Length: 298
Image 1 (spheres, rainbow, N blue to C red):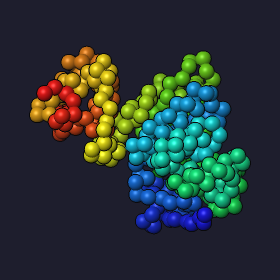
Image 2 (cartoon, rainbow, N blue to C red):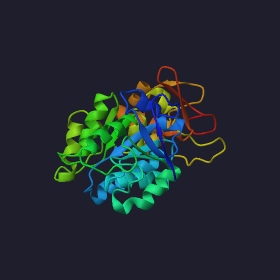
Image 3 (cartoon, rainbow, N blue to C red):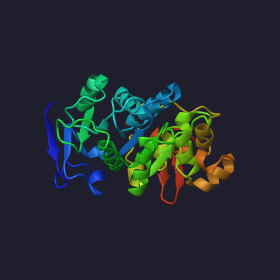
């Protein structure tokens, strides 16, 4: 597959990246689309644990299945798991490289690179033929952060390129998220420190989506009309919230929090899940209703 170069004046240049000081040229192998503006980056250590790999792949799968483009750096470990999760969901993924888009690195990733180019794009600010030199990667990390609405750090030790990416994301005004890990795990010391410093703690895709600006949260894919959506379990957080909703009586989120007795974060996450599953709808002023004949009280 041929590669091509874009500059910020090109209408195909990624909108998120064009909104910040951007690389003068972006080399692409694959296809960039307007919908890639709804993107989340997932990054982490190359020496990931089985837990970290599973979380990264599952999180990428869940987000990509809802129309969110997954951005990562194609490194071993967490990055590779994130790309694979997005591809498994038949979603889009962008790999941001510290070398030319025609250079296979790491060497075992040739097949994965081809899959990404077919179902998304390989992108780099470095011309074709450029080797993966160490000093390229800090610049690569800034481009990676600039392509996304937020960055999720799954696992990262105290000294990690993923933490650099998170810091760059914060500098660019992007959201910073982190998945908690065991306090005794060296590969989670950096990501746990991010949470301690104010990064949003991530337990699942809902925690990411609920932090997106309203225009992007509403762009997250919902089931098509007529699709059957499994009703939430009655004793689940979603089930308890759904039981309080009516189609013709909007309820403010604060009332739902008070009536369920749950934390604001848990109720907000439940409402987001219900909305994306086509069972609830948010009105102006954080008021919520259910759809007729889709659950809630009659």
